[in-house]
Length: 372
Image (cartoon, rainbow, N blue to C red):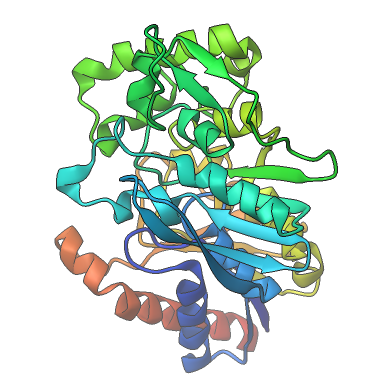
């Protein structure tokens, strides 16, 4: 049996590559006569670039940019010929910021704009950016500074490349801004469809987890709304602009980027269609499968791209109560790797063992069906 293993990462525990390889090993240890093919994926959240790099064998490279606290830091990107990919979380992700320093209005995103300029000067024509998992909430103002835009308050003082400047902004100077060449395509890999502002926007939905006090939500949301009302009103009506604390909006406005489906773009880049056509079974997975997954997360995106007649099963860290009855979205079976109730800390610690155990059991079950 040829099994295509195409999971997303298990957040806070395993990258997609490791998840795929552990499932493959579990199947090999089972009674099933199996040919596992690993194909890790991502939907625009953290780990997407690594998943794509795994399949495309991209080169990992580093360059110096401005870090979240204004200091020079090395920023990672992946490249091959005229193609480049990077994740903003490698610079300003929640995991990069100590808990006691998570102040999303003070952290700088200047380095994202600087990296875009650098890549274009290096001859990159196709740039993909994963915007999930940021610790910032600046509406994209910071990256605009990295592209050469300058922002001033009413007294003419130049403002920092951070979200706090949205509250004080009065004017923009564009004369020294970097011009994106017409032959360069910048695409944003997004895993959310939230608008930039409003109750479903970046601030109200994601601000709290980044450390923003709820009593600031309305003020910050209004500041971002006012900024784009004056500068680029069309951004406010577009779905997905709230991704990355509003970085998606800044990228579209200041870098002429285009928002695309993270999972569909990932599957296109790794040539998923040609890999799945000869599969007898597809295995998908993520840390938690829930109703939100149905809005375009990795497991559902893979299932939708799998041809009819090829069954899809999900192996996940946990399954939520709000999932529809199986089968749904081409998924015929879903399995949680959790053996028994335990603390989250212990479950994250045991994820490798539990994932291997579950994959081996599924392989044994499939071997019964094949022998019958």
